Image (cartoon, rainbow, N blue to C red):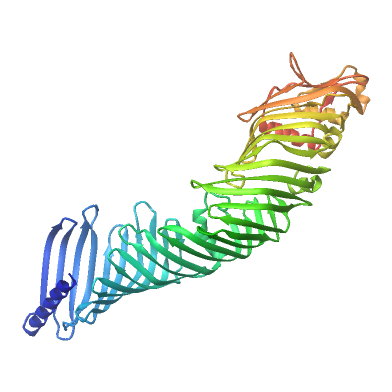
Length: 602
């Protein structure tokens, strides 16, 4: 094929020489339309200007493949060599143009053949080029650069070299966006039959890093035979928005600030990853929505399909949902698609979360893991301050016998028991989806037992109540950490113990029943008492579609009883609003705890 091509070119040049020797100074060939099974051409105009010193060949045409709707305009003007040797061939003023492509170019061919075989050496230059596709997935503006190509045939074997210098312009190639130029690629290799070999490739991405690679690929299906790649010094602050963020949009890392360095090497055989090693050095990582942060993160994360590897990760400090994390060192073993670690201690506030019997595996493209967890005593005062909650007292601790993760959902087997307010909070049926994702979801049942109402009401500035409290929150569902559904009832704990309530607490509880609620008392002079006796108290809320159906310990013809008096002096507090918007109820609670609500006490 190449010999035939060279023969045709040689005949063309002989014809050119013979004509130039005579009186012919110009040859013009025009065709209205040419059809071919693979495409069509129309408005073809080929013009040859003959000059003893320098002849030129000009072409304008409209081309279209069979599966395309619109024609593409092609034009160029070339200096034609006078010699059959064809050592130099230069085309200026080239243009490829249609409704979505504008590609000005120049092409300089320094060599075509050597010793009867193709030996191409060419330089393609583009300036202020632009293109886009109909789907909007690929586009470029003001693109300028050079591509140097060398291609030589030896029998059925081809050798190639290329150098790309991207000087200016911006390119969007879904999902990547690159701008400002300054990027370069130098590569060489060979191809034979359908196998492309890259002997050496060096890619430089400005302000990001440099990649060295070699490998082989089938050209028929573009499947990798093998690939070795090494990226020794990656600047994460510039690499994240350019290379990583497009793949992280639906993850917890879709909007982070990151500083530091990384190094990555990998080995692929038959389109499957065989090994890689990722190193992180002095990385600061912070979620812009303040969900998490890690500072001075260092890691060595090797992996091999054939051999187990030890991985390590440590950081100096961090935050998780505003809770400070202390210095941590994590060690684990990775064996193909599984990970084990006997014990990990994560300092949190003045306590720690201890994870043990950790085991994880990737099966069918999904991660599965399980572990046991124990929360060492954490100061509730510090905890409440960090989460911007009313200041609490005491310590909280918990133990979870088994935590599992499957199909993106965290579940607990058994109970999570928290020691708070001198009582217990027991969480069961706990499931958690995407806790650090865009739309986290939590489901649980919570049982509160024997909470000290004195500690509780002092914490939330509610007024003084002496006694014990039980509560059940069933079918709890949080979406994006906001309640959307539950059945809740809180009431006095069973048993004998002092039960006292202050006038301020009476006012605040009454206010929760609605703006027109009042305390119904048995004797009017009780307004002069600062403290009252009660026999039982309770309040319920059934939340559905942002509406809370409220109730108390007993129903009445006009409402429900929240506090039932007992002894002398005694007091009864009524609630009258049986339905209230959830946001309105939260606003009432806030007014109560802010001390801005007053009820009429008779």
